[in-house]
Amino acid sequence: MAAKGRFLAVGKIIKAHGIKGELKAIVYSQDISQFAAYKEVFLPKKLGFSKYPIKRIREQGKYTLITLEGIKDRTSAEALAGLEIFVDKNSLPPLKDDEYYWYQLYGLKVVTKEGNNLGIISYIFNNGAHDVYVVQDKNKKEILIPATDEIILNIDLTQGIMEIDPLPGLIEANEN
Image 1 (spheres, one colour):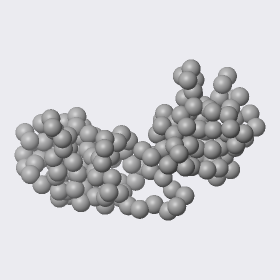
Image 2 (image 1 turned 180 degrees about the vertical axis):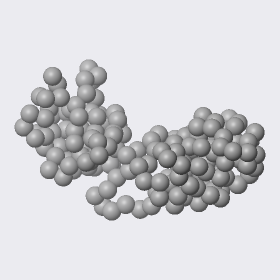
Image 3 (image 1 turned 90 degrees about the vertical axis):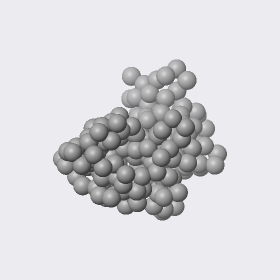
Image 4 (image 1 turned 60 degrees about the vertical axis):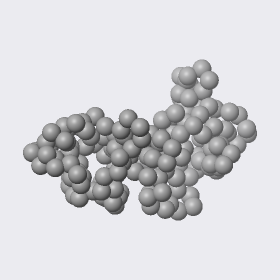
């Protein structure tokens, strides 16, 4: 998920689907219902973004089919292939106090409870059981940090810091 100012990338248009302007897209969220909650999306154009109200969303295997107001034929839909789909961050559902959107965590400095700087979060993925933070140090080495309550002690978005208590061997295992 990439963020551009007030907008957050939530998917990417792959190609046109059918002849009535429907779009085949990959949605970055694991749960399509999150995407389906949006009333409108924004598509990039040369000088900013264009707003498109969503008319219909449906699943097709690992893809999502989207119908946007104003896109009425295959030619219009084909012109959008390859574009990322954005939403206004203000339209994101509110989270609980201990929850964060991935885009908020990218770039956070990760330190151990002893104060050792491990690097910054450069990538996040889900392994099926939980999220995993990929922390990159100044030498471009990566450390994989499981996002579990026993490891993540504190996240301070204002200070840009995540404090962790790595399990014994976690950091050493990632360095080999």
